[in-house]
Amino acid sequence: MTETLADTPDLDLEIDGPIAWIAARNPTRMNAYTAGMWRKIPEHIAAAESNPAIRVIVLRGAGTRAFSAGADISEFENARTGDAAAEYDRLNHEAFAALLSATKPVIAMIHGFCLGGGLGIAACADIRIADEKAQFAIPAAKLGLGYNHRWVPPLLALAPPSFIKDMLFTGRRVPAAEAHQIGIVNRLVDTEALELAVRSLANEIAANAPLTVRAAKLSIDELVRHPENADAGKLDAAVQACFASADYAEGRRAFLEKRKPQFTGQ
Image 1: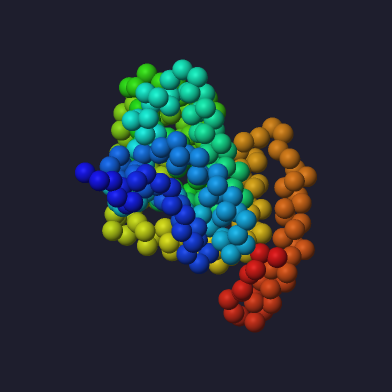
Image 2: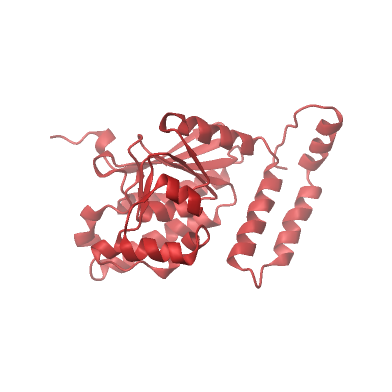
């Protein structure tokens, strides 16, 4: 059978108003990430970050079957053995680092399977909204590969260490309800309503003052990742930038005039 463009694995970037949609497309392998797709994550995040019109980034998988089944195992024989394994890990590190360093809010829209590296990607988002059929797992122990310690902190920021140990030791699939109860998922919605729910949330965030949202994200991330030596000067500067902004003046005027503010991020 001839492979069509739609069947070719890729990571798509679509700009829709204030939202950047980054979609994994690998339909024959449940949107598993190839090396080329991992490589595109930093590129797409950089493009979204540099575009002042974009207020929110959404990660998703094409279709409704899977957010992502993780790394494409069909590449492992060549790409994840011997010396090549270090290069593949470097691609993973750079992808996760790009997601974690994004200054704009990142939402993971999770249809169906969210496995392995797919869960790693979702864990790097600020908010995770999933459908009620979603399943989560990290099957590294079932494959015999080592789960890099650099990928663990985002998971520990979501759930207790004992639960992450359970997932890593067993490789079991965790149903949506359990993932929601433990804190891996912020919200569960019906499959048919998932995209609308995510779009509504993204637009709600996008309508707010970008500098205020950015300062809040920076503060939370800094305090969670460096609780004992957070950069207070950097956080104070981000808050002061809000008070010095034109958006703060616009917010005050809009409140007094009883109208919706029009924020510009300046």
